[in-house]
Amino acid sequence: MLGKLIKHEFKATARIYLPFFIMLFLFTVVNRVFMQMNAGLEYSPQRMIPQTILMILYVLAVVIVLVLTLGVTVQRFYKNLMTDEGYLMFTLPVTQDQLILSKLIVAFVWNIFSTAIAMLSFLGLFMDGKTLQLFIEELGRLWQTAAENQVNLTWLVILFGTTFLFGLVSGILQLYASIVIGCTSSRHKILLGLGVYLGFNVVSQIVGSLALPFTSNWLVTISAQKGGPTPVQYAEFFQGMLLFGIILSIVFSVAFYIITRMMLKRKLNLE
Image 1 (cartoon, one colour):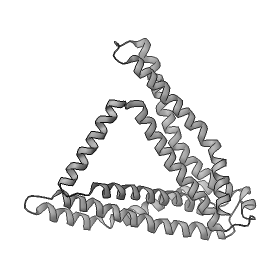
Image 2 (tube, rainbow, N blue to C red):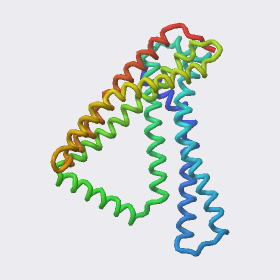
Image 3 (cartoon, one colour):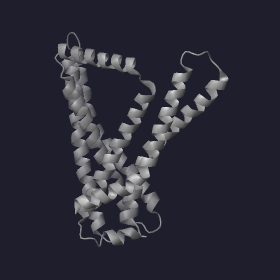
Image 4 (cartoon, rainbow, N blue to C red):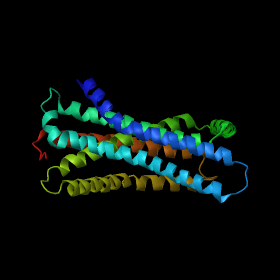
């Protein structure tokens, strides 16, 4: 049943996302064409004005795609589970876990996809074959330098990506937990939900700051050593910070999930 819920959610959200992805693609292509046409030509207001307008529209399209992802993540969860549609959803032969996971998985995928689309659009706009070749060569040199200094850069990149993914899951679940708590109010759902969300942010920052004394002491210790910190020590420091971030994201994800599930199990104020 979880698979059916995910399939239905993808179909419903694709109708929202795809037109904006197509819009971003078109603005990318048009801007790239104008940039290539004007490359090497003398400055001319007649040419620069339309190109400037197109570039502004392109930036707006990127912003819209990224903001849309957040909006749809909130809208789909709220509308499907916390309004009149919630009565229908909760009569289906599914569990609260399946409802939450279906929303979470689809939102997670669209967040990743939207970010990737925006990055590819940027690369497609500004990067040509020569620039791409130079970029790859510089990356190769960076990896070679790291290896010469006994730093496993691949592992650090994997850790960074893992931290981002776990942080994304935690962020989505934080939105869900804020929404369900906000819906306990009969008159001020949005204000309460926003206040809860900000409160969660404060708590996460306070918890994250608990590691500050340890990291500060560690930096002071290695900085005071003869010759200063080595590349390996810097790598170990960043590795420790990333692992700490992953652990925090897991802890908060579990907490937000439990809050969401418990609140959904109760009789909330559905509109």
